[in-house]
Image (tube, rainbow, N blue to C red):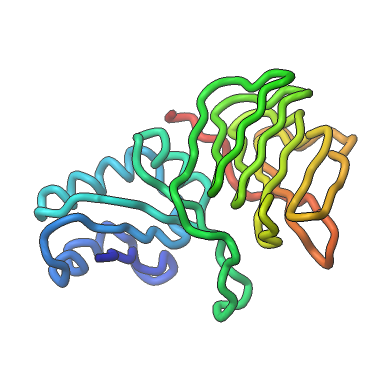
Length: 209
């Protein structure tokens, strides 16, 4: 069964959780966080509230990178799902487990995921990372990154320092930007009109991991 947190514009999840749990049977729960940006502390509180009500969090999905990173840091099964501009448009990325790698990838290293990929660390020049879904680097991306390796054009590449030697999304290839990123803000690369564009991801680096 799936527990959906409320729209953050209408009600805080802490105020709504008890009522929403009343409608669910006891047992494992898939948690849909929507657009909530949750920290490790938030997720620990959520887990405790679920357990107190006789439920257990089995899986988590979210539209915010920070929430997925927090979940991965706690060892939770987490999936990143970007909000579609058109609600009727389904993502072409197959849902699946998030592959998490902790540590720096150096020249000659290769890392691949059949779903989404999250790297806690730097990806140095000469290293290559790829995923069928999204690629996220909680560090400096200076190697080669390929998101949507199986053709998903809605896949994205996100990093705290997005300056790769080469970017690939689906079948589109581009060089990394030459200018330096704004310190303290993540950036993302995505496809727009058949070209790779880089823009702020509006995600603050986490300090509680």
